[in-house]
Image 1 (cartoon, helix red, strand yellow):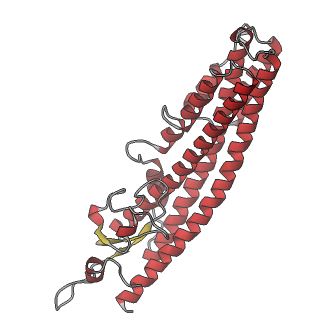
Image 2: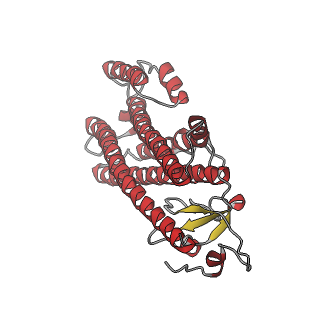
Image 3: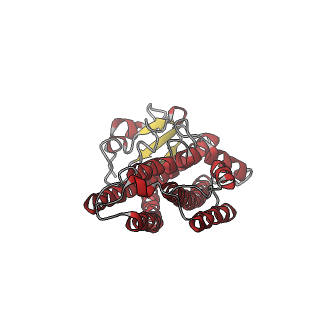
Length: 321
């Protein structure tokens, strides 16, 4: 087969795979929107009830918020926290926190509300992480099978290899820490929600404005979560592909920019890069968060009359297709 035609087919196959991945992205996005909306509704409902129950004509005062909480409400929360440990897949640190979490009967109304909201955020994070981890595992298997089909690889020792890729750090941080860590999704949202509580001592007009701000913060957290899983899947696919290119002794990687590529990725479309020089964010996807570019392997062959099969890629950046 003509090498040019073969490369065109590989290029088009990558574009098709990109399109399929984007459709799965949309499915995950819809599921995430539903998870976040349900969580926000529960959380905002708790805050609304708190405000309505304890606010006077002039709004909510700190004195009212700091009064002792009803003992039945405290007991109810403690049971809920105990049940959550049994049913949810939290991070190890969260599980330990919940196991030892036992609100005292003399806790204030505000402290009880904070505990309720904290538990809601923990539940949201656990549900999001479970969905993300399932997505990571299904995508890495899908990409491995796709690459194996292209390259004709066997599946020997694949489980151990794929687990190593899933557990790998990305720019010095694991996926789990990006969700549960000090600067992860859970901590960032908790900080925003608790900051909102500090502005709860206001009249009804001020409270309505604070509700809008909190809704925006939830929306920001959701957008950050979407970006995180999309970029993580790209990272997984890149690591899977690079490992297989090296194992099969490919010399070069041909970059395939996604349709409507940005100004970062578009100039790389159709360019060849040595496999041993590939670096994510430089000449290997993901070039940036949300990147949906990809590529395929190429083995350089030398021509007797000089030059090689890389001539088209190096000399013609536009690569007529």
